[in-house]
Length: 209
Image (tube, rainbow, N blue to C red; front, side, top):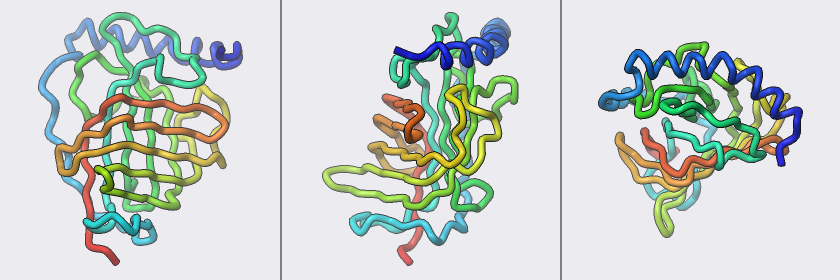
């Protein structure tokens, strides 16, 4: 069971966020067709390592977003959300042409388009991690693993201090600018883990060094 420490953190963080989410629903921001996927920027992250079995070049861009289910968050400390509101998880790599991964958890209306700008007041948490390795395998099908260390928390996590913790991200994927990611899991060592059954976005590859 989740500790009262986590419950209390989520209570005071979620209260104003849920009100914002309800406003999104009331003003009809929960529907619509998904926005076009942003163009993939070239990466200056030359130090990122690709798996020896990548067979398709060095991974240079990864963008994914999906709806989260509180039941897939460990420890289980996320309170229920009102109807019409959902929480999303977004992954961006690279960040500002740096060898860094950004992970943002936020509230939005159910069915809202992905990869839109996120109002600051809707963000639950945001962290940035220095990437040590970005591995890709295509055996037996596309799957990836990103590992690194949390370097900053622009929006602090309800799960407490994160800076210095190790981070891993794993998923299965289909390739392209309309990629899908299955079982996209982000784990912050010794703190918490969130798994998305399905996410969409981009994964792109450059030439092997």
